[in-house]
Length: 195
Image (tube, rainbow, N blue to C red; front, side, top):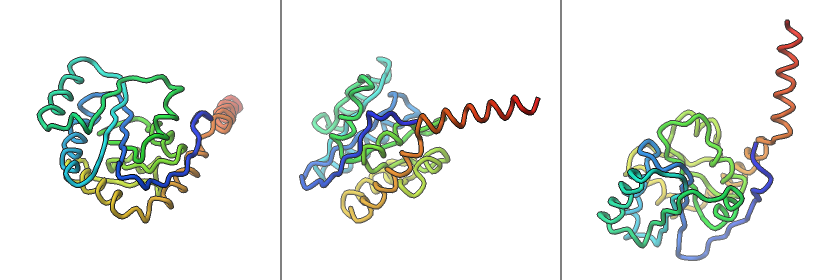
């Protein structure tokens, strides 16, 4: 279920700045390096800022810092690290696009949280992102160029965003703790009655 602390916010980004958010543990399989490369390609066309949120070990943080410095995107990227759960809604609501670039996951809770806040979500095309986002998501291949092109298309075209955001809101509302707990207890009762 998605917590009630996440509230839908209508967005009408008329400013020149595009704020992109990636909430995930910082690790190689989460593809933050590819995201940095894509931001580097975008920086000359758009005023983009990337916020990376999530826990990390020193080795992975240093890999990211080295890449940020090498690409000269220090002004475009902030590594915020781990933040308090209660602060996540404000973070989602201060951004324009949520990325989900992990190579493998068991579940994508951050996609649901972002959709509940009204953020469009761009995810690498895999089974879990397709299952969760369905028609509400934007999808890209697991490559720097495709991530870049997909972000660029979202920024330029904008025409499909509202429809996907509203679809995402509907999807996120299905993930409700009350419904989940009822279904869990019903499942346990069904198993018990079969013995």
